[in-house]
Image 1 (spheres, rainbow, N blue to C red):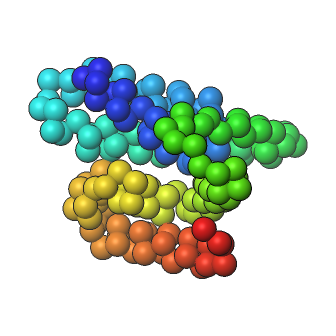
Image 2: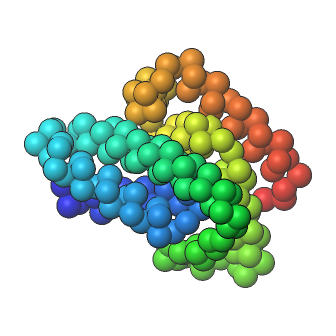
Length: 173
């Protein structure tokens, strides 16, 4: 179980950080999801852990959205700024190769731009995109994790890809 959690920790954190736009909240969500996986499903076969963990993670993200919606209603009522938080700086994955500085800068800018664009997508489109394109789940697995129909997954994924292609169309990679 430790090996599995170490393997998915970073991707889960990035997924949660994109959804919440807050590194501390994302860390809490990932820790809660990992704890629930260990407590409730540690006895399940290892082959099921990936889908179970992602299902738990995305449920925790939905819970966070529901709670933050309620919190933001109170902030508006009391006249507080709902955008008071600042994004934490991106953590960088250790380099395994040393590209040319201009190529590295272009790649970093594209990565930051892509993260920003993904963060602007509606939550369900973010989830479909991350689960399908990044985590590598098929449509049926993604539908099960997201607790929706396969048709909904296809729609959300298609819309996310369309928006990203439209916005990145002129980006020189």
